[in-house]
Figure 1 (cartoon, rainbow, N blue to C red):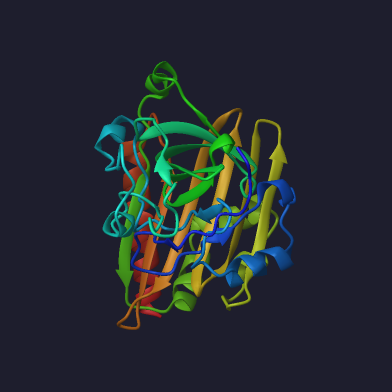
Figure 2: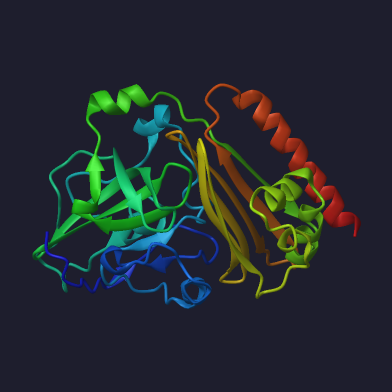
Length: 305
């Protein structure tokens, strides 16, 4: 498929807050992002989709994590182009104005469909759920949901669709997804977060004790990398569009898990904390209880300051 630039008249992602959507060009993406490139992510204009490469892993409100066994429940548009409303409510991602793009048409496949996608950001092949595939002139792009929450788009030839047999063999993928309104600023929440055993363990594990004990500012940012026998990890903590965001992707001998944490301001001057951990295949129940207790600890410590 030709990778010429597509100037879409509108890209609308279903969300109630500004997410850290960044444009990515796989052909020109460096293997490791520098601090300057992390800064560029925050400054990227997220209103135009010029070339099929959006990365919005923090859009947990619009696209929460999905258990593979619930794949058939995901709303999609098949056999036609989506309406504007359908790009606003999360049924689809990209809207092509028919007056400007009269040749735009859906790819002849039945959605939703699981696929593998190599993410330059996490440097892992991730499992995604394709919810839109469009041909416009000589270009073909897809819109997808990350299984662990969030959304993105790519060129059609950057996703590798799973067969029905391969999809069935994946089994259940239960993620712990929790959120809470907290009567405190994100700076206070970070201060409370750093006092928890989880935050202290991250500092020791990645050799970043100083960062995980320092106050939070809009300039706070760190890259997290780990490569030891049986485990690799890549992640970052930073401010994205005013939100505090943490994401760490783990590869443990081929088993992929993720930790995502987002703290955003609310209209009443407080904050909302959302996080996704997992998937937990064997011990989901105990892990959910564990992280519920952790969330209560963070909320209590934050509001007591």
